[in-house]
Length: 257
Image (cartoon, rainbow, N blue to C red; front, top):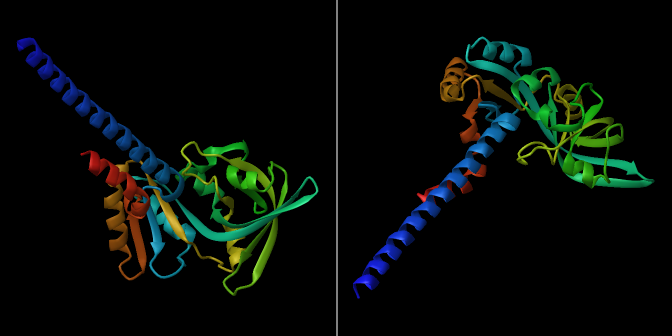
């Protein structure tokens, strides 16, 4: 009888220990995934701080805002971006293939490679280097029948007046991000070309700001807002800008805790 009681006690302790270990492992996995997603969003889309306009597009000069940010010692780089939704088509093996509702991102090639690592996800070819070149996400390239570097793609965007604007681009690269948070489902072109197509000359959708020290993001955000009190700017950290996307992981971590 004594041996049975000891055996039951050992079994219970072992079960509790295993349970605690499983919970700890799950927490580490969830936290690791969460940190990786935050890192990828920061590297590809928001930087450490992202600036938008509360009501419309940003109409301040790109260079003036970039210079303002880069005077702050902790700022590594800042870059403008503009976004739209496009239709694309191309002829592959004699067949016309069309795709709709493709996110299209306009970038400043010089500054984007300093503030973002999107250019590092180009696995075939090169990043945007001219106003008539386009980088296709790997999934977009696949949906267009297997688009390759050097192929010609026709892109349609509706401008601010409701008019269709069509340009032809040469595929300069194919992007494929390891974590799937990059531009795998998008197209990337020169920001000035997208401004022309949207009739948004001199306007910007957002500025992503990359810091040498991510922990200073809140400080930089608040300093920026204090410096432009009469504008309609919204400044957010990576976590704030991605709250909806990250909420599921936060819930998972909270449940484990």
